[in-house]
Image 1 (cartoon, rainbow, N blue to C red):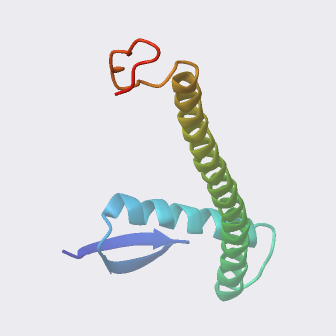
Image 2 (image 1 turned 180 degrees about the horizontal axis):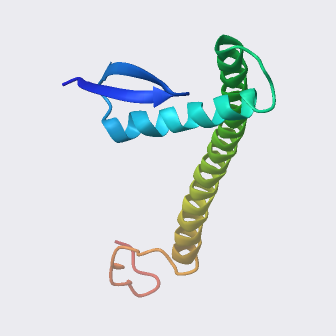
Length: 122
């Protein structure tokens, strides 16, 4: 169910209808407010220009974090692939070890027939 939430961004109220709860939307608004304050501090730019600068700062941070995330995902995939390769090698080594240990003992032979004295034919 959608939640109706009012938040304030740079002293302006905005009404949102969102699936997320109010605390999440307030968290997002806090980020926007911080970016707006930083973009507009010490300048006399318009609210629109401040909003564009704040949006660019947020987009810049997002793109950099996405690059870090993509890099971490690639490292994780590489580690998982290496783990799978090592698991296959271990499994193969265990199989070879079992084979070798069976090869060290004479294989089980069927019981031998009683031997006949020399010179007798059967």
